[in-house]
Length: 341
Image (cartoon, rainbow, N blue to C red):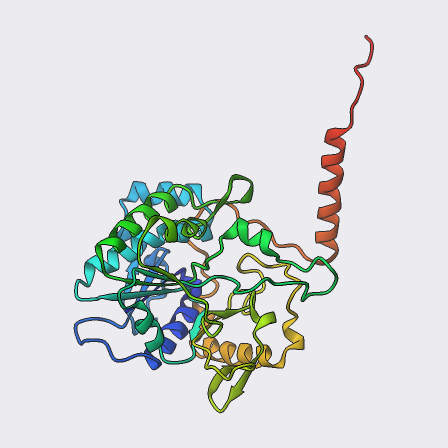
């Protein structure tokens, strides 16, 4: 079974994800849905004439009204969804007791090949984790200070929480309970305090819990942050790693579909416009999302997550903001002698 968590405006992408999962997996048992869409939003805001082929699990069914309101008041929408993730996963395991394996994927993910390798690796394991990078990034971008670098990954977490694979086990229950206790109260994006959504906590998981595998396979989780190291090619309808011919299992379109999403809005390592493979994959993905008729859904703002979202600025505005911030810090350090009265 696959679980994703999204807001109403992300439902077109969630549906593309779900369809791609179903194309690349065996049919689920008749009493078990193949995909469950966790809605971190208010279902009352859904258009009445829109029907969905997959069951939707609203966040309001997981919390009391006061609990949900407290989380909503303290977080941005992205932080709110991250804080709810462990509870969503626990709820799905509880609602479908025959499900033995549970995959989580962000709505930006697209399955491109059979998921059987995931299921094979998950046997006798508690959790599968995919690192952002499998090798040092080096200076693959313009200049000698290409970004992001390893230091930034220490801020956000080494393992990407946009894809996770769990097996049903007592160890998994303990892991999810621990993760929930941390994520619900400390899912802020605050690098100065060592916090970054639900994701930063996963760095502790391989130490705290047994049966966790860290995947070192470049065909898993191809994305903006590792595409500089993973050129692709398309052979008929199959996407492959150009270097090895290995089929790409799944890709994450975060930061490509919407450049303002994710943790790398100012990355300098990849220029998608100069990569025909990336542009072809992105074009195909955009066509799939457009086919879900997103016009009725994308304008709907999240109902939960009341804290303001930091504005992404680019070009001269970003330069001016950087310079003014530096100037302000400099002024704060200037010694001003006390004036005589």
